[in-house]
Length: 153
Image (cartoon, rainbow, N blue to C red; front, side, top):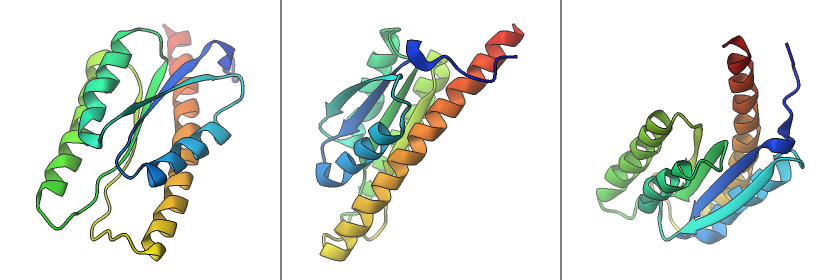
C-alpha cells in the first residue's frame, strides 16, 4: 500500500468569510503556510459566515476540488442569533460534505462573549492562525486516508 499521497494532483478550495477579516485572514495564512507546497490551493471569499455553506456547495459542484475548507468567525454580539448562525453554518457544511461526498472542513470559530479589546483581538488572531495550521494538516491527512480507502476498492 502506498503510504505517500501524490499531492501534486490535488486542488483544495479555501473559502473565508469577510466579517472580522483581520482575524479570519490569519486562518488562511496558517493554512497556506502548512499545506504541502505541491498541493494547489484556490482562495475565495464571501461576505459572512452564513454564506459559507452555499458557496462551499457551489465549489463542490464544480468537481475541481479534492476538498474544501471554510473559515469564518461568528461572534456573540449580545443577541441570541449568534447560536443560530453558528449552528446553521456548521450544519450546512456537514450537509454539503455528506451530499457531495467531498471532504469539507470547518475552520469556523464561534467564541462567546467576544469583545474587540486588544487582548481579545490578539488572542483570536493567534488562535485562528493555529486553527489554519490544524485544518491544513487535517485536510491533507483526510485526503491520504481517502486514497487508502480508494485502493481497497
